[in-house]
Length: 307
Image (cartoon, one colour):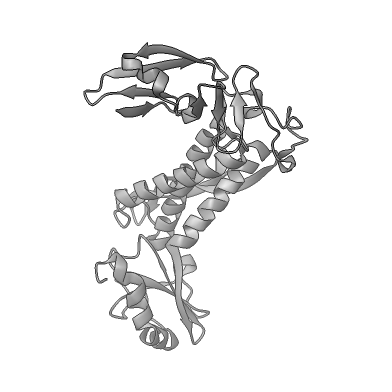
């Protein structure tokens, strides 16, 4: 037998031939009605509404921490007083289920509800911020985006990761998104570079974010930290690499007070020489690269198949 669940984790059961042998319908608050019952499986099965455990004797659902009564639409015991919320309608009633809105909220543990809307919004915002972060890093690397230095699957992976982080943050803290903030983000378009048109940054727009979205952005900051790493510092020079776009060809970024190359410094290959089109390294920077060559190889090795 196989449990088949919808997006809210309501259950029906199918057999090995994918035939439905147990099916239920529920009202908004989880009152259960059996609509299909082959070999009495629907009565025997205890996993039902929202994948809660259903006790036939008491007609209550068990949510790991408390029992819930779908007839009264209330938990039968009080929640911890730490969940009191004076800013939410119904937030002073510690017996309510899903803040009296089980259509738009879910409660997996019987302790706090999660907003489905916030889950979706958080996932969209997180995915957008992740995609934008990688695109911005791509541009900072060589002044262009979508030119092959970052593969399509790197963009896809970052977007999926950002969506997951955003959904988690948005769902858990969606109820406290009362604040708002404004930020400027770059916009992309066609630019003239040496007589040829390419995609680049053309300006910026102001985006207003809610408290939930800002916390999603905090998750994305962690993502950015994960993909941007300082390898080391020596003699006043700093060497960094930015996964995933520092392996086409393999290179690092060298920064110093006498290196005036904007935000990406001088790009240097693993042989210690600047990439094509980059200026010569100052003497001190060459010493820094030589001194830190082992750390450079250790940092880039996993991404180019050396480890």
